[in-house]
Length: 208
Image 1 (cartoon, helix red, strand yellow):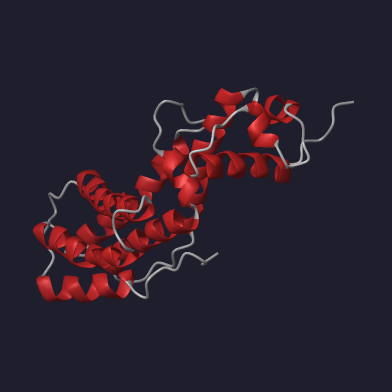
Image 2 (cartoon, one colour):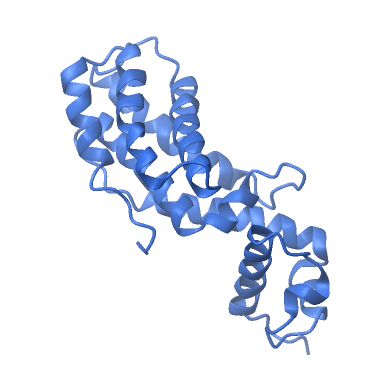
């Protein structure tokens, strides 16, 4: 009779490997399980080998991001909600910096590519709401705007989590998003107020 896999062991191995990457330690079968109480066979049991572990790490990053975005409470103001989704993106990266780095390693395919698509879909649907309410131009390309919004958040938080910039640099995100959204048709003062409402209070790395 096959033994039931323990989800806690799977998570332990994923986070252990991600932390080792962050610390620039050699990631091998033996080094991953060292001190964990499990054998090297666990890498094969849970992931089918090292390549499977890398895929699982990428997947876990997008799974956690998708959950974070789903948890954002939506309001009657879609522009505020866009900024709140951006803040949630930053918060996820700050809370899971090790997995965040692995998420964008395209050298390993995702187990479920739909998880990555879901994260962008949250932005696209919110942008469509803004278009319906006349905040953005009717001909605005929702996917293009979602991609540009994501690029702003990704660029800032990547520079912070890798060290070149201090955390305070993330405050530049609000005016950058305001400029982007007004270029798509939103009124300047209204947009600024909406973005500030969604962007602050600032996400903290210890948030759950």
